[in-house]
Image 1: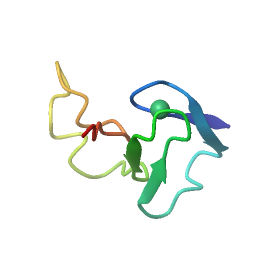
Image 2: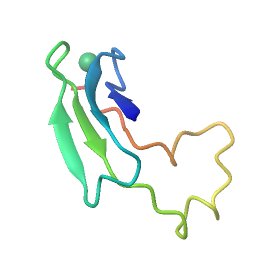
Image 3: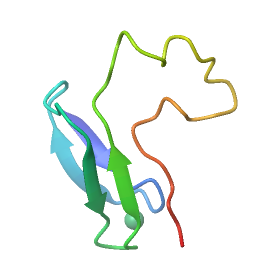
Length: 66
Ligand SMILES: [Zn+2]
């Protein structure tokens, strides 16, 4: 199982099996109300092309603080 945590406060949002997510998910953190955007792992797409050095563009969460 994979623990999905808030990108802002690291609160546990939910747990999921790998590859259980088939589409994009938007979930609001109950603790800090940050909206986390999740997307399924895509092994054959841009994550392999873009060097992830210094950036977390390949991560499944993004910050969206007001
Ligand atoms: Zn949070």
